[in-house]
Image (cartoon, rainbow, N blue to C red):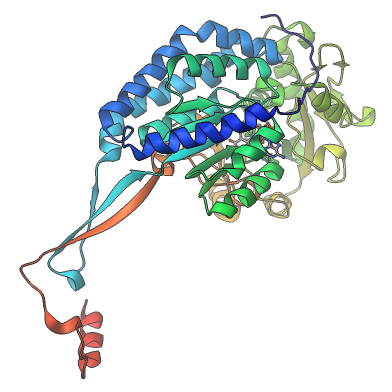
Length: 475
Ligand code: NAD
């Protein structure tokens, strides 16, 4: 598939699609109620099948990602398909352990008894994903849903239409729709999906739409995970290794042309080293993409005309230090560094989600912490410093979803680290065992022995209160 300039097309939804949504939901509820998804054998077979299907169709998926926004093959593999493969392998290896009832310590109050937590699938899950990592953000939650024994309806983003179409085709050709199905479409289709009574909703996307999803879920008291966005800072202190910091920040920022939820959104750099740091970033951009980044095969394009227009407004000529060139036809924007930025600048009013990096400065760490804490809690924070005490201060004094010390984005690559936001950047987390847990209700059960039944708890209570107080104090 060639990379094709396209505009954002939001087609009205046909009645047929709405009826199909209701039908799929009914079918999946009945399938789940039949107990088919409960055996671990079944779950593992589905994970294996997903592994094979993704392998068989890898090239089509690469091509679709390229057609949607010229995503380079290495990025498509490294951040999407390869990532999914790792999570699949982990789930296949660990699901037996994850699904085991977990014994928890007993308390004397219940003697004789044993207590267990039984992970149990919720039922039918709805997984809604955005366009920027259209495979990763659809399939990684799905792995958790399958491993935990749920059915799922997947709603990929209409804004990456080529990828959504391939995903729809390969899922419908390989899985029973009573178990797994894809619904394509935009706002209208998603609104209709959200009107159904799902047992779990896993949403990845903007904070604004996250609110809509949570409101809809509240109608049915459906539990939700919300993986949202926001402005994630990178903080660079004067004692950081500036060359390394510039390289790691430029990589995290310009990967996927900045269209990454955890991309460093802006840099706060200590005043004394700002010029040096910007110079280092200029070298990195040339090292990565040459002197004409538009010709680099390793740099993606902006997803659609709306986003291109939105980002172009941030390119105020007086602030451009590096880059700044654009091409409307191919939706190209240079890797760009903005300087002399205030908090009122257009780039600081919203999540940037593009290859534009504003640089702001601070005098001491107190000021940097205050600047971050004045705003919504970020999804990610990256702190570059050689000073252990300052690292500790950041971890203690700033609330953020997750992040790295002296790196960007890499925390996502460790499946043992639950990934998620906090406050406006999200609710709940996943990856590795956390993906299994998120799609499982933790059913707590006490097994009480029958050979002893002390009369103490039963009425008449008489003067047992004194005794009860003593006993609880003694425990
Ligand atoms: P979006 O919120 O516009 O869309 C996400 C999904 O919601 C899509 O499937 C879309 O069809 C649907 N949708 C859009 N408007 C809707 C509405 N009014 N009602 C119901 N459904 C609706 O997000 P996007 O533009 O696709 O993605 C970009 C955003 O996602 C950024 O804010 C980014 O930070 C965030 N994001 C977060 C993560 C994360 O893991 N935390 C990952 C990727 C992207």
